[in-house]
Image 1 (cartoon, rainbow, N blue to C red):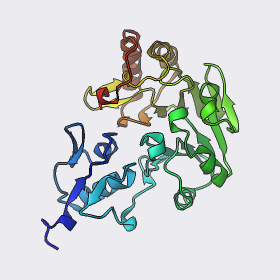
Image 2: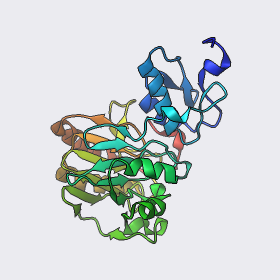
Image 3: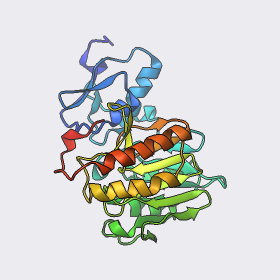
Image 4: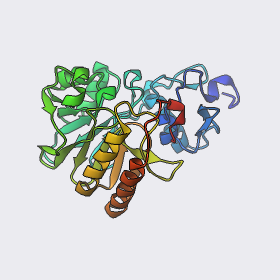
Length: 295
């Protein structure tokens, strides 16, 4: 096949919502152009081809196309191993605004799902091939879609905070208040109201921080950031939550729902989180504006 034929060309179609997921997975090939993702260079190596397939199978609008086609199922890399204990689920859902979701392996061999990918029984089977999933942990209301379906399919407990209970009223375990709660050996839920009233940060083994939409790694800033322009509940409450939580947590991996991931020494993340709490305290409420997020 001619490499310049339409069938050989990767591109992003008009349905892109600029969620940043493709740029996280194929940063050298996909960039933001005029407010949405665009393939700025065709892959040159097998690894780059794999990166674009990963981006395509994560895209919640299925906007990443190979000519007139979507990616072939045989090239689906998900669940994609990020570390010894964490897999990225991929297959982001339009019903969670394209959020990333994760599988966390525990010492006993079971797994926890943090937030949810798009629902299908075939995907559920792929995830359980890694081991039994005992808990589905929702970070907040925006990512609650499919939680009950996955929990029922896995025979797992569904967790959410009382502040966002309306999004999952049939949850099996409801977190309450603002104090941290150990929900499993080595796994602690830290209520973090701000982005939403019931936002939660899940910390595992003082190593992995699943922050939902409370904060993320911004490539633009080269630092941890809050999505101040997409705060549904209260930026003031988020500042208080960060000030309360920063001294209590240590982690080496930041794994958010939206925004990029990063791996740094725990002391470095601790310093950056304290600084983020101080910066957030200086912010004022503003209208919601998705276009203002600094990816």
